[in-house]
Image 1 (cartoon, rainbow, N blue to C red):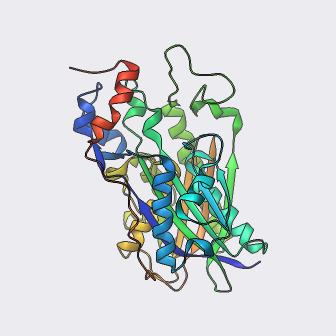
Image 2 (cartoon, rainbow, N blue to C red):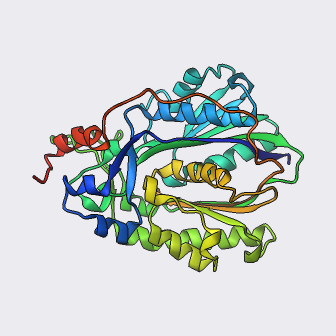
Amino acid sequence: MRNAVITGWGKCVPPAVLSNADLETVTETSDEWIVTRTGIRERRISHVETSDMAAVAGLRALATAGLEPDDIDLILVATCTPDRLIPSTAAIVQDKIGAGRAAAMDLNAACSGFIFGLVTARQMIGAGGFERVLLIGAEKLHYFLDFTDRSTSVLFGDGAGAVVLEGSDEDAGVRSFELGTDGSVADILCVPRSGTEGAPGPDRRMVVHMEGAEVFRRAVAAMGDASTRVIEEAGLELDDIDLLIPHQANIRIIEATARRLRLHPSKVFVNIASYGNTSAATIPIALTEAIDEGRITPGSNIVFAAFGGGLTWAAAVYRWGSRIEPLGSSDADLPPSDASGLELMQPNIDLYGMGVQ
């Protein structure tokens, strides 16, 4: 099977910041409570749709790969917050970036979506069906937040990250992977009434529901165990791993996963303090920043690990190729906005009738 190698990378995070201090004004919480339990200090709130962030991240990834939109054969958008149910967000992105030759589809594995997409792209390229795939993780999670529930409202943010994968004979790419789902516990992390099971109720509530303690317990076990198995399957030892890039859900989950793998903190990439949980976007955003910070070098062995609603989990060992330098840059950007993060959240606050004066 031909290898699928990451040749481009990029991210898009909206400019508006919602700090913990901002959240103190609208719900019963505090900066100390949030930081201690989650590691999050601020998150970004989008003034545009999921597809807009996805398009910018995608164009930046294409530029880094030295490619044009028409060079892409397939666009995969991993998201659980699409612009619409029909058409796919990927179809909207295809039009926005001018990739008219590409097939396009969405993939929803919640926070595990990027790794599910990475494996899908690898299999598509390896089977010979496609040569170049643009994979994007993008989310506008603030749309589903209820500020009467401080256990969820402090966790999530908006953003997008993208990679370009190309067929290659280079000894690089996904070395091993594991994708899993346990639908019997789907209800512990979900957005009820967001599909055909029923329209939002009289109060129009359509918000994230999470049983935090149970999700935490399962996440640590799933991410740690799956990571251990894929490292073994790749024929590597723990000492061979150069960097763990985990889903950025909660600092305690990240630290527990690292301890389970006996990895030194210097081998774990963490940026949750700045962005919170951006679901399928966390890993590609973190990957882009890790490259920019020099944390990835040619031949690096990287472990990606995630869990999410479904309940899904995923892990993959990826060996980096020979190039870490971008081949170009893009001036693609979001339209300007003067609104603050708190101002952009006001519709949610008004909708759920919450506010601490």
